[in-house]
Image 1 (cartoon, rainbow, N blue to C red):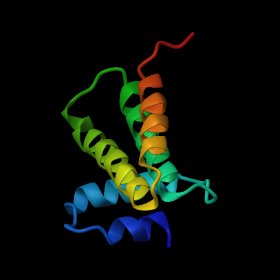
Image 2: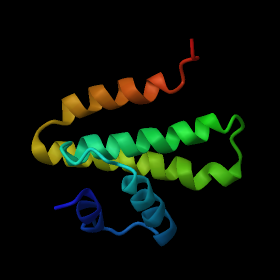
Image 3: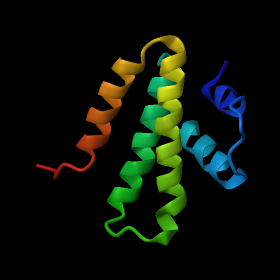
Image 4: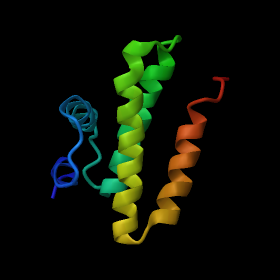
Length: 104
């Protein structure tokens, strides 16, 4: 099952705009060998990195912020289903926190 199919099977369904933004973020996820949780975290990381890279956050970024949050939340759900919640949480927090660190 693809990660997009896994997301589509979640209930309750998310609003259409959010669902489309999340699926769009996953289209860029090329690591087919990674599990669902890792792919969802990578997509959340990319979306959030794009928002932070814009320099100034505005209301126009709201959907992206919501999508990043939803993708990370679903990553935790997927990892809980597979018994890897602690590992996923540790890796996700490190990766996402690194986005806020100043570049050297």
